Amino acid sequence: MMINVEDLTIKIKEKTILENISFKVLPGQFVGIIGSNGSGKSTLIKSLYKILEPSSGSILFNKKNISGMSHAELAKHVAVVGQFNRTDLDFSVREFVVMGRYPHKKRYERMNREDYTIVEQTLNLLEIRDYQDRKISSLSGGEKQRVVVARALTQQPKCLILDEPTNHLDIKYQLQLFKQLKKLPITIIMSIHDIAFAYNFFDRILVLVKGRLLMTGTPEEVITPQTIKQMFDVNAHLIPCESQNKTAVIYEDD
Image (tube, rainbow, N blue to C red; front, side, top):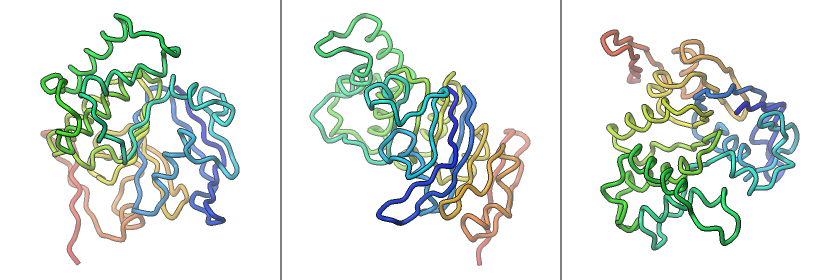
């Protein structure tokens, strides 16, 4: 899915949260949104799935303005993993993941073999089959987060939008999630705090500072000591790890 955001401004109670944001996401790109708390990351994410309406500007999915799309229509193409998800309901993991197929079903339409095949594939992909019969309320925070991601993937979206999805995950499962998402042939947009993960996994990065788009480009282009200083007001160094083909981010003590 191609996404075009053009001159997006969002005001909440007369306060400007985002101002004149413009960028393009190509089909299949894995795009990160980084910035400090209060920079507008979550506001931008919410605008992409119509929780917040633009005060001005437009958001186009495959050249179609989402302002003219219903939430039901949007859900057939876009799946969302927000920061705060209802996981206190009395459903099993499997029942919860099956709900990801609902946007594709008519009212009272039953699940078919294809739906259940998609569910099985997703349970395997995120390695949650072993506890598919457990109640969600019994899971740890990290386990719940993986289940929420599984439900989103079960929608088989053309675009997956995630708002800080690694907050409750151990490092092992953060790595696992990024590797799994990287393999998916869909457009992915994710907000995140971790600069090292952003540098090593995203195809492109949007840098937000005080509600404005500071820059966009490849990780190598936009994540520099100077940019990190502008975002977080800390001094940092990028250390290549050639044996792993990765880069570490080291922060200085004051």
